[in-house]
Image 1: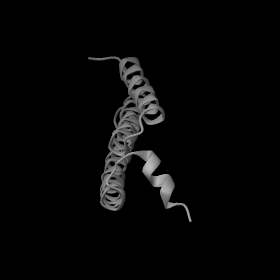
Image 2 (image 1 turned 30 degrees about the vertical axis):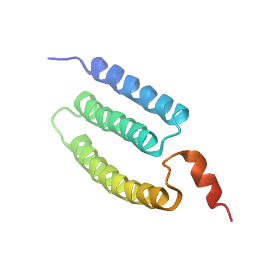
Image 3 (image 1 turned 135 degrees about the vertical axis):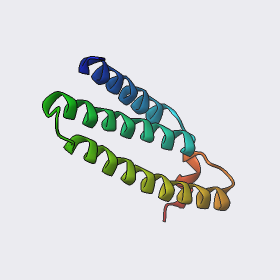
Image 4 (image 1 turned 45 degrees about the vertical axis):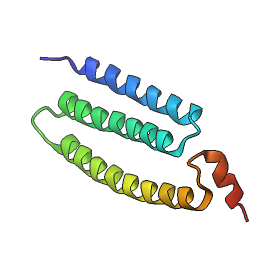
Length: 102
């Protein structure tokens, strides 16, 4: 059986990779993938905390499933926005969005 601390370390590692990727990338798709890494780290934390605090119950698992559903909807909306930005500016760089200021 894997200790809960290993899951927490994995979650922290994924979280910091996601934050680093979000802050350093200028491609909208790469930034979206980084946000998804952060959300996956949160999901691992929910499951690990549920296992550590309430081993016989499933509240953390239900929160994880809810979070996965929300992140899937968020990804669909973000990809639609990125496609529209690409169609309008022929670029998927963050700097192209600055041209949208009114």
